[in-house]
Image 1 (cartoon, helix red, strand yellow):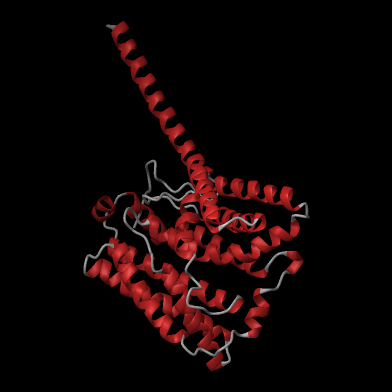
Image 2 (cartoon, rainbow, N blue to C red):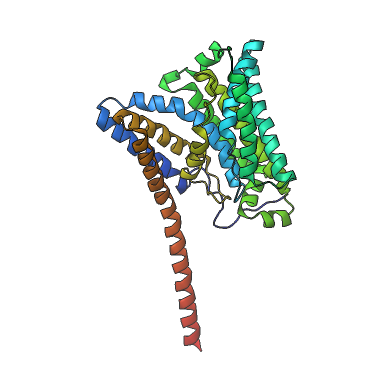
Length: 342
């Protein structure tokens, strides 16, 4: 199948403009932290790189879902992370294998996502409703497991997650490789090109012979798998809890949009998820450093997010305006030339 992706929504690659705004915002917040704390910035960056990968993993899955087009979103990821955390720790404790625990967490994410996909594709339930319902079921199971839960995270996996070769967290390096693989998936595979085409125009993709239902279903399964992986790793790094994934729902959507991915679908920017995740982690550090109240923290975070979104959207609007003016000028010149020749 030869799939061509065209138009203003085309995915513009990992080194395109939209990804820069998240990194710029992260750098700005980092400088503010340095100015307030007066301490070296290396430790701050190292801590951010320790926490950001968890948000990047779930953010990459959310990015794929949002890229599938208008209305596609996975609001079950927070519940999946919490449930996967308990299942992963329980499986690792029962088998003595951290790998089995991680696979169990991923399996939980895929299972919950499969329920959502069946509801979306088989019953025509809107994605936000389908994933919300699946998330509520997952949350109920999580609360049941949390009651009297005694298993502890695998110490070997926890030690691996805390490794910092040359001062860089090992997990950050691993998720950087994962990000490269997602870039390759989008650019070099039929699935990736099909996903972009579906996000740009589902009707056109169907007419082109793309198996739209299969692409969308696979995308939700990938999102579930990545959310499950996040839960498995996060539970080993911290500890399993019923609210382990609560903050990751809204944050996973925010890092996707701030990272440059179009909320309307058709353009994915995996590298941008990294910049936006670092921005959020550093922003949390800043508001905790100054000791602001929860209300003030939310106000600052909301204001900065809107500011970054404004900057990110400004370039697209300016370019669009420039193109429209160029076309108008060309049409006017052509019309004048025709009148003169006549």
